[in-house]
Length: 319
Image 1 (cartoon, rainbow, N blue to C red):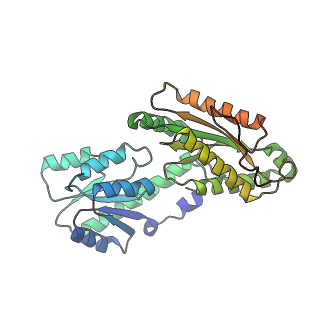
Image 2: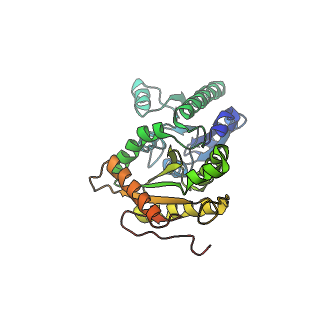
Image 3: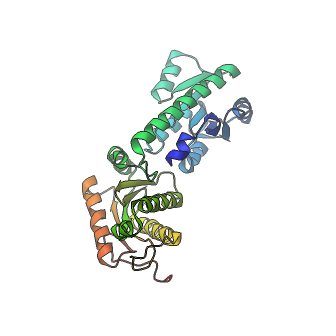
């Protein structure tokens, strides 16, 4: 997410997910809120989780009592996903006992409304929580976003990479890293100047961020012209496919670079994977990615090297 987009967001730009197994309830809730925010409605907890795999709503308004998977179970599943844990949830419940309300708070909700729904109360609570979310988003971006490129920064990497590693271990899924940098970037700055160098990094970062297909995949500027893509639930083969797509994305930008072998800006990438059953640390996995990147540079640049393979130049057919 880029800073310009975050700063311009208003209440009307927010997106609300309504989760309720009763069609009439979904229709009522959406009718009360659609003039304030955009809404998507789903009929089950499973559908809510599937939606959140591909999207990140600003707020979830969810019925507690649903068949198969109730609201508490959905909330718990979201809290276990590092990329979804901060989505605020308002529960809708017909039960007003202290025990039921305590369970809602224990599930991690930010608020709850009781049935029958009071329109004024619902609208104002949703408005208050969304305004709070917008302020938090802005603050988080000031802390975690690199102001030049719009990618996440080292503060994000230090705070969130351990969470991704822990989640991979918990869910028994691999975590892959793609470390890349711009080929001959010092030459680029020397020829075209640092302002053009900054513009190049912004264009590259935006294009790569747009090319990432899953909300859980994160682009981080490690420093200078070096970037990292964090790929949860991705094995090494999958990470190499992503890395090759990144190379193609940058190649196709066709940014002139007279002092590069291909006369355009290219990148080199190294891949490393932390499997759930190995004992690799975060630092070791990063070091492995760095060694793979170094090997890619040694094998001609504009290529991808995995931890157990030789480089393969995905642009050979283009040049």
